[in-house]
Image (cartoon, rainbow, N blue to C red; front, side, top):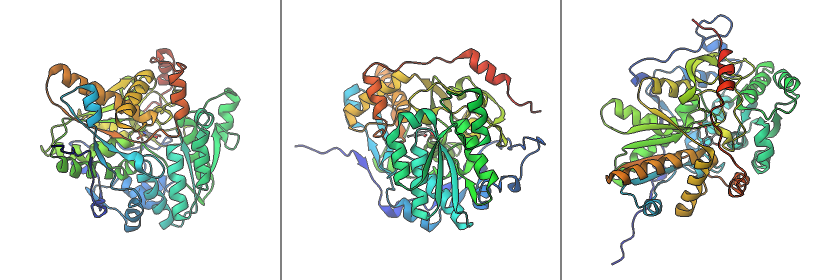
Length: 455
Ligand SMILES: Cc1ncc(COP(=O)(O)O)c(C=O)c1O
């Protein structure tokens, strides 16, 4: 008799997490503090106050293991959360692997990715403190559309500096941001000192996240009514993303499986951290044995080829110095289609966790990422965002290894967003127009030579 196999492991809306999980108090060693770029002394909350509301600054340094999610934020989460955990049975069959493959699908959010988890929280804390305007950067446009939607829900105005290469490659993402009521400016722009300086030196600059961050920070620093919102990298952003892993723990229990390996792609590190930190918290208590793998593009290998040291978060050097894996703040990655992975640094928390040996990092070439995305789409029906393809590629790699060994392996990866607004990149891939990029050693050596001298 036909017996239907369960594909989706779903939780009721009442299971939307009530708290975010903060791993900091559970780590064996504290993180290095952010430093003031002038004094090189650790910064305090007051140094960040021109940019962020105090509610978020306190989360940045919190020693609390659990931080309550405000009811209004939870209510907005209910528009799409809990997100499904899906067993990729069709992909397993296509690969003919003994591995069990699961993915947590964050593309069900109305903006199309995990970014909405923090966008809503950030807009909410800003609103509590009377802020009316937010400025931000966006790479692929996922973060910009998430913040634009969160601002529309909470009644804030939003201005988005969009990396030039994505602005040109992704007009529909731009239109979505505008549909949510935000304004979009191609970066580098003539609207800021940082943008003008870049354009003067490189009139054809295709931009980078580092440059767009400088522009958005500058706007917020100069205007007391405007705050800045960052889509990744900072502790509070990673914290908000832990709803992903907290739900996944419950869902894996529903599936009756325990992950052997956890995988996430890493741009600034937030979707990876969101999935893995709650599992790592359990691992530190001996309740989880999973290997944890961060996947970055070969073209922008901050974790695998960068240095773990103090650096600026932006190209214009307006941010504090943070200790992270970095390729140097002047490194401009090639214009690969995974726009959200083109960042010179990595979240200090993710860098720290890798330094502690709690997670490992690997790279995927652009063509391999797209090949994996197509293979995944043909089996599962979902076309992943180019960023998420990096995680898909490593999940497939793991499943094929399990097959070669003839042993089962339970794989869980974060499918951080869908690629419906990225179809031009798939058109270019299918037409053979995309290429692989190898680590440009000379350029990175030059960018690393410009690292700030700290201690
Ligand atoms: C779908 C998707 N995945 C991943 C990323 C990378 O960011 P992070 O490493 O912060 O998750 C982005 C960034 O724009 C994204 O849009």
